[in-house]
Every structure is written in C-alpha cells, then in structure tokens.
Length: 484
Image (cartoon, rainbow, N blue to C red; front, side, top):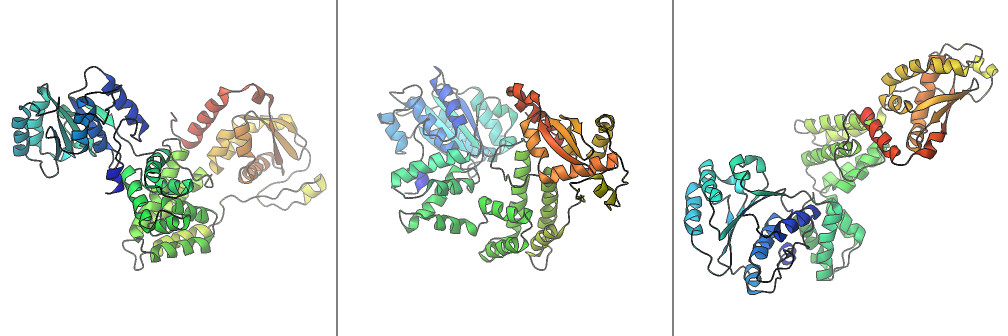
C-alpha cells in the first residue's frame, strides 16, 4: 500500500497542519456540529483525510473531546471503507445537475447504520452552475441526518451562496517543520534510516504538499531501508530543488561565474526542463524578496542581503526566463544572465581615504572632490547633516533611512563619529559597502576626505521591546511596505 494511504491521519491530533488541528478540534467539541463544512486549500494538504476524520468523529459511538475512538463499530466501518452512509463524490466527473438531483433524492433516506450520512464532495468547484443551484436547495434545508463536507483547491469558483451556508476551514501549504513531522511518522512506522537533515531537504522541496513529500520519501525507500544523503541530493538534482537553487543563487550573487554555469549545465544535462528551471529561479527570488519585506514567512537566503541588488537580480532572471522560449539554445538566456551579473561593476565608486594627516589630505588626487585645507568643526557637520541625508538618498535610500536614527557626536577633521542608538542599525551601517558609501557622501558634502566610525549610544541600554518596533519602522521606510 502507498505510504500516503497507509499512514493517512486517523485522528485530529495526527493532522499535521496546526491551524487545522485547532479549528476542527474546536468545531468537533461543540454540542452541535455544523451541517456543512467547506475545506479550502492547495493539493496534498490533508483535506480529504480531514473530511474522513470528521465523518468518524460525528458518528463515533465513544468520542472523546471531539476525537473518534477508531475502535467502535462505526469507526471501523469508515476506516475500512465499508460504510454505505459515507458517500464520496468526485465533482470533476459527477458535475452535472442530474448527478446532484440523484444526490438530493438519496439524501432523504435515513442512514443504514450510522448516525449521520456524510457527503464528501471533492473538487466541488467543478460543478456546473445548475448543479450548484440544485445543491444550494439541499444546503438550505438539509435533513437532520445528513452532513456535507465540500473540498476545493479553487474557492473563488464557488458561488457565494454556497460558501455562506458552510463553515469554512482553511488549509495552507505545510511548513517545513509540519511536513517533517508527517515524514517522521512514516520513518518510524517503516523503520527507515534517514538523517533529519535529509527529511528537511525533502520537506523543503515538497512545495508545501504533505502528499508530495511522502511520495518522495516512498520513492527513495525503494532501494532499501537506509536512505543516504547522497541519494537524497541526487534525487533532487534533476529537478533543481529549492535548496540547490539557493546554492546556485549564492554562486551568482558572489559572482562565481564558472561555478554557476557548471551548476546550470549539470541540472540541464540531468534532464531538467529549462523553461521550468527559469520559472523556479524567478519564483525563488520572488519568495526571498517577500520574506525580506516581511510579507511572507519562509526560508530566507541570508547571503543575499542587499534589497536593491535582489530586485536587480529578479529583473535580470525574469527577462532571461521570458527569453527562453524564443532562444535558439534554450539555456543561453540563463547563461548570459549569469555572465552579465558576474561582469557588472559596482555603481558606487569607493574612495580610498588615507589614514593620515593634513599633508596627505592635500596630496589626495580625487577628481570627484574639491579638497580644501583646514578642519571642519562638529558644529559645521551638524549644520550640514541635512545635506548629507539629502545627498545620500539617490545613492541608497536604505542607508538614508538607517541614518535617521543616528547623530554626529564627534569630529577631529579626519574621523566623524556617529552615535547609533540600536545595535541592529550599528551592525548594518558598519558593513563595508554601507560604510564606504557613507564616507563618500560625507566627504563630498564636507568637501574633504572623511572617515566614519559608529558608536552605540546610551539609549541602547534602556531599550527592550522598543528595539523590535524600531526595526519594523525602519523596514517599512527602507522597503516601502507596511509590515504587520
């Protein structure tokens, strides 16, 4: 028997989506359970399994806190698929008005054995308008002995009149931890030998689908009970898994052209569809952008730490993915994108500031700066700080937003000390690329080479929860989105 059937959850507690466990747990503990449920969510997230658990729970002879006992005669009939009172309908192949009329005629009959007749209609969005209208009549005035569980992956196709008569339970893509939980149940039951890290790899590449993750684990187990890390990685290489795409994007970001091109050649020669690879790369980059903007949750690629560069990377590969179809050599546009990124020069010219004295300052040959002798006072720096902020924005608005939480606190003519109130901001500003841009802009505004140092201010000692609020505010300013 296939693993996903053999290890299908049989109780609410065995369901792997925490949100669904909580929702159904509360609904089934109630004295009167709803007469119609609507299960909404992507494929492979447990909608049908949950429907069967609900069918058992409402018919169980000895339920406990809403959970079916799985031991009474009613539970056994449902588990073994022998109950005539549990009717599962595939709306994709029974979508017409005649099918629903037949259902309406049969629903009047009382259950043969169980307390309730349960109608589970899968892919309910496939019904015709006429069929929906016929179903609506039944949902409006259902017999007391009948309950409906409608399942769909496309809720927007279901009429509002149907939705309004159901209790909606939303199923989402599984988190990595939730899918690993599901896989471990199978590993234990089948006595498989596999590392936790490899289960995480499988979970990350299942697209949020529990069923897909289980099918991968089953396929890997065909060669024996021991599943090696090498075998898991080889399995995903042909499909350019998300994790391996992360490796590729890391190579591209670091401008390791030879390695990145070698990765492309390897996965394409391994049978990966080039068009799908282009889509996968763009989808992954978009996902990382949403994570960094705090719009979505998920696994980040921390190495890609510049939001502006990330947007450039998305644009570059988005154009490359669109060009695949018309290319004489399918992989060429992706390869050119890698080369183009690797060969691009930085937009910001970094000015190497001398460590030394006014004599050396006078010798500095920098065409971008008009160097004048003499020291600028701290008061002058403070007076011109608004100019610095204005000049910074065209270079990098992220830095400009971070500098709002700083203030000049010292200047000796060579080193400008900026007091920073939050450790998070200090660490970001001290990054080489940020510091170099700040030094360039400050030098231009002050008309003399200036180096910058950052000092954590006294305010940092008094913050607790305030830090989080400030980070969120800065993220909203930097990324231009509202963070919830």
